[in-house]
Image (cartoon, rainbow, N blue to C red; front, top):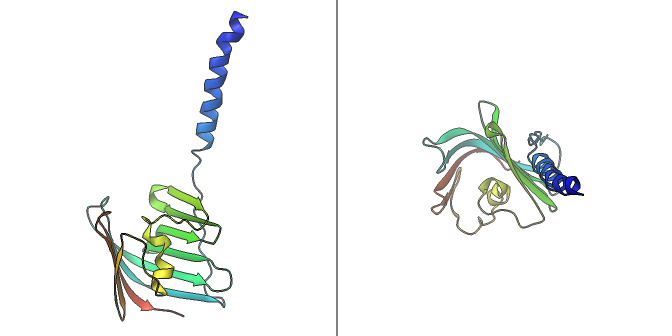
Length: 163
């Protein structure tokens, strides 16, 4: 009887460790979408992203779009063709990935995280207001999104869109 009691904490610890390790799986990178087909409304151009984590702004390319038929929204920020941020959402779920750091965050439903501006970018480009805490300045070929609390700024120089 004594040995069985000593094994219970060890088995419990092992079960907890297995569950924790299973939850720490490496996220798979969201694949690129083919937005050349009918029903896609897309914007693309150059981007400057300033955030509190990086000392220098990230300068790269962006593409964002909305599938009119499927309701899929996506945004990607890349540098030299290498994805840096990929965001995708549907009516049922959303996901954002920071590819070089191998980090991802996911959620379900329409309660999309307000802090990840890339999840809202397709709607903002289509004319919607940004989420609470963000401000937007619009010009003919430029969109500037700012969140002072998050110390984040995203400036987009639109080269083409919507198409």
